[in-house]
Length: 450
Ligand code: SAM
Ligand code: SF4
Image (tube, rainbow, N blue to C red; front, side, top):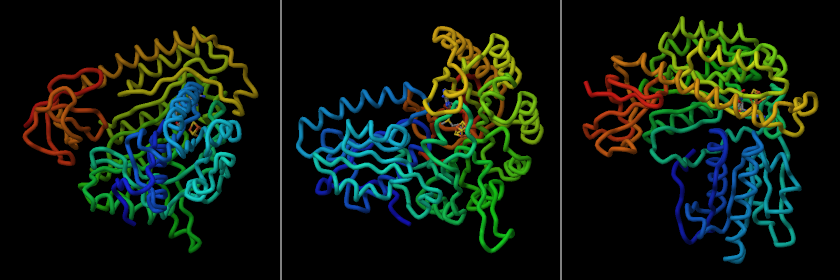
């Protein structure tokens, strides 16, 4: 493994990549760049210089896709300016729309076909656009060393699995990313070790449902690795390397994982635990395989073992048939748990999903928006409440760089993933600092040096 940094070389064909959607897509763009660099391409951040323009796309909600269609029109301006410019759409939207996209661009490649990108690019002619949207049961890109596209050289993503087997009724991911498969743990540890050797201080292990990570060896049970064991293997690389992970599924997060987090100081005390709804009726229709009581029990367990654990979530407003009572159930659950922060969305029907076939998308746009706004406003109050509990605490922060508002201050995250801002004493990105929380906003902990 090598390849950590992007190559910039004007003599090579230039590739420009825009990434949309989740952290997994960010990491996929790093894999794509690694494959293309090995095939002779170099990265450019200037679209005006690009020979190949790629958008790594997201299909999770309709507005994510609409944005890409708008971008394709802008990419086409580059084609008019320079001969031979190639436009490619890769990722989830490529997988979902296949030939329909091929009418608009030169290249369409799904999430499991990135190894074939050099051959596809080679084969493109004005009359022969290229497509590969085959999904795989094995592909994990385990042997590919991603070229890091982060800016600070401190924190990196590592994909530990791909795909999803859950089929939540609203979700398009199982159709665009295929079946779940786990990656060889030894390649994950090697990647984390290499990052640490290159100065990185934090890795985030990524999967749609990390708790179902499972590596089965032919040698028999003793060699098998579950997610808790994988966490331990990565945590043991160095106490100075922080380990994060995302996303946990409430139905699968195990006591073993919670106790493993408590055992290692460098496994960050933060769990992203998407609830989606506080109503057991909605959760059943969403096929989440847990109910309100189960979710609240998991939160209680986490807090009994790790009292200061950061907890964040995802919420969907206005799913099919959602009543005022269902919506109220979401609000009361949010008030009961007091999440640190949340990603909040209005339900967007996705073609091909179980919900689109079984349940009418019957909550009017205005009602969805009104409920979403209520959820967002409540979360703002809950974030402030959660942050206020931090006042007076001493926290260990990993410096990410200067704060955006004041160059004499630094910013970085506490173990809980809360953002801290504090006066600089000349530290740089990647250093650890101890600070004391003095005051807070709903988004930030304002700290002093100790
Ligand atoms: N695998 C993760 C999980 O199960 O929690 C989440 C993956 S998904 C990329 C991220 C979030 O998008 C989901 O947690 C959900 O809140 C939201 N989402 C997915 N499908 C949606 C839809 N059709 N409409 C609105 N939000 C959606
Ligand atoms: Fe989608 Fe559910 Fe899989 Fe998450 S667990 S990716 S929400 S199907």
